Length: 203
Image 1 (cartoon, rainbow, N blue to C red):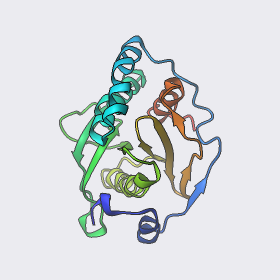
Image 2 (image 1 turned 120 degrees about the vertical axis):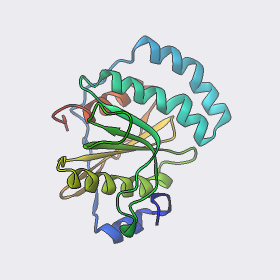
Image 3 (image 1 turned 60 degrees about the vertical axis):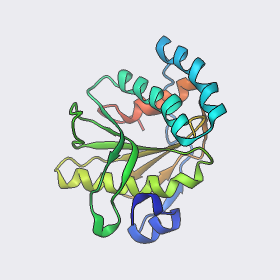
Image 4 (image 1 turned 45 degrees about the vertical axis):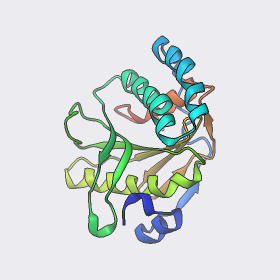
């Protein structure tokens, strides 16, 4: 089944994952003050996205500008994809479209390994997107392994635009940061995102 049909329980059962709360998972990621471009953009688009309150509006007006800022601050080549088809293994239910996908590659025409993070944008609540995000993270790990570029961690983000939830897929299972980060403090959100994109992750 496609990523969008996965629940948390379905992902755990299909892929044998354990999910553990990990307070302080991203504690070593220092806040990254947003640049003037992001500050000015969010001042205009954040009220608009909240007023419209659809997934598309939140994705375009809040999530995309934040991810672009993280890409600018990464200190290395990073490709960013929006609405990309990411079918890795249809037989195992690893197929479908990612809202956003980040790769540690300069290639922007097609997704190249290593994929490092997937981002799901939701307009209602964070929990509703966790199953889909987890399934995409498992697919990203397989994608990297098949291309000979495995990473020790694959990151996942579920966001409403206003609230951001971060998690990591490790060999021992899924680590879930219990903190919900709010876009009113964009420096903390950017700090975690940039930490995910560092050559040697800080977490």
